[in-house]
Length: 200
Image 1 (cartoon, rainbow, N blue to C red):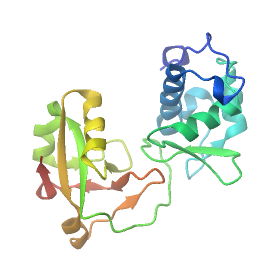
Image 2: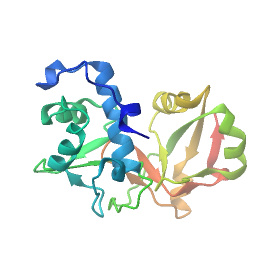
Image 3: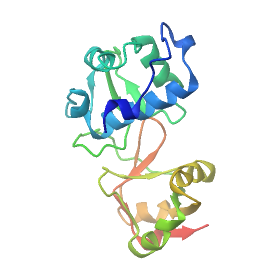
């Protein structure tokens, strides 16, 4: 998708993080997700094996079409994103998406025991297929699970009227399934077979 369709920030001046506009933050946050999770090549950047890319290069490439973009605004997006989609490394010279990639990366998450119940939000039009096939990761690296029903509901309503599924992660763990927790608290697993799902 062309940059012009994703972001239009010409009416904003981002000299420091305090001068940002909520709509501009939302647009650029979505655009960063698009680039860092799915299509880095559209901005002319490269991700390393763990999904990291240079902050300097990212800003240079973004400023070519969005001259208002600067480091303070990028840090504002990372710090204030409600879903904590992004992370800097310790020296803040690299940035990556926390999860949700469709490009090949190795996030090196360590398996962890999850809460006994987790939740997944989906739109109702996908419910029949899920109840037949289970939760599949599709083009992403993992299935994403939430720790509470409200978060699951917010995820589900992105694409229509939401439905919420509970997942018997205690039994899944006992049956040998692995779980990982991303830096932003989202739980990840390879798949959720039908027998572990319950519609709320």
